[in-house]
Amino acid sequence: MKSVFLTAEWLNLVMANYEIDPSILTKYIPAKTELDTWHGMYFISLVGFQFFNTRIMGIKIPFHADFEEVNLRFYVRRKIDDDWRRGVVFINEIVPKRAIAFVANSLYDEKYKVAKMRSMIYGRTGLNVRYEWKIKGQWNKIYFHTRSEAGTIGEGSLEEFIAEHYWGYNRVNETKTTEYQVEHPRWRVYHADDYSVGCDFTSVHGKDFSCLNSLAPQSVFMADGSEIKVRRGSII
Image (cartoon, rainbow, N blue to C red; front, side, top):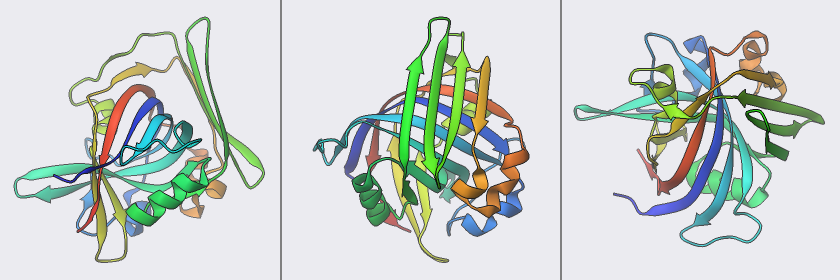
């Protein structure tokens, strides 16, 4: 097992999940993986969440421990003997810290961008969570509201498919892929009573994803999150 590279808390993970034509994702699929499906449907997710108490190799970097991230990701799997490793591939990840982006892009072949960001967690009648990020002079947002308590993830549910991926894969080139493991307990989820997504997918994520501008999410939910560990990656 690889040594731990990063530890943190990932909290208040708002996930807006869109069914997508798999042909759009073909050129982004890392070598040695294949698209993962839920009941024959393919998904891509816009995810906003908070990093807290971030440590790299056990060291807390001043002014880089607590920050927001928003990412666009899809789902793949890799077969090892008789088992499947279910993982995520990031189209890109947006953070407000240049050093975080530099480290992730250099060591894991991630697709980090740096942008001005802000988040708000508030509410008297329910829980409200908002993430905003500024790209090309325009503020984008994802907003989530719930009046319910967090509940367990149902076996076989779409929430389970989206949240229960424990590997990360990044395309290096046509034959090489970076693989790394993420560890966390099974999360609990909140269901949305209200939500809104205000994202210019073309500007933020590229013209391949312009179709998302006119689509409504198949589902929106929020995972409570937990402490996580990211283990060192390797080339496969």
